[in-house]
Image 1 (cartoon, rainbow, N blue to C red):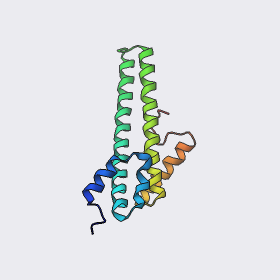
Image 2 (tube, rainbow, N blue to C red):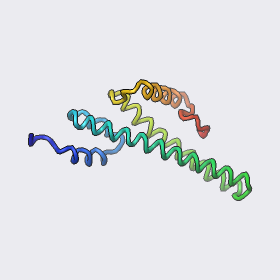
Image 3 (cartoon, one colour):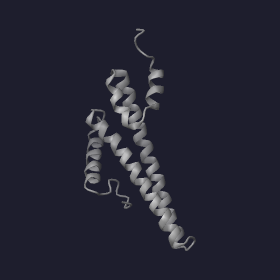
Image 4 (spheres, rainbow, N blue to C red):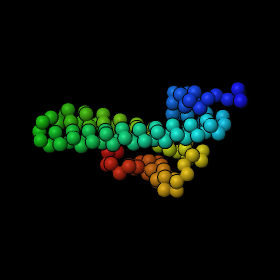
Length: 134
């Protein structure tokens, strides 16, 4: 009994692990696997929310440009920055999703299909989320 960490400590440790190492620590035991799975889903959702927020910013920026509230150079610079940010967030999100899929952490068949489709789209240079910002 003393050779195991309390779940609260495992939660705290897992929350601090970078994305690239997250899935690897799931191999410790069942408790770690469950906590890593929970944390991976949480990060997946956070990436999706952030991508959505950045996409809304891109659309708002476009509206400002159409209304001539900003000049073309500012629009292009900021728009390119947002697109690069979305691409980076997408890569990070897909990394977690792929690792979850390969390590049996995705139970729902629809989620599996979504991940496989997004990975395929991304590999072939497409836009996995259909946002039109690639």
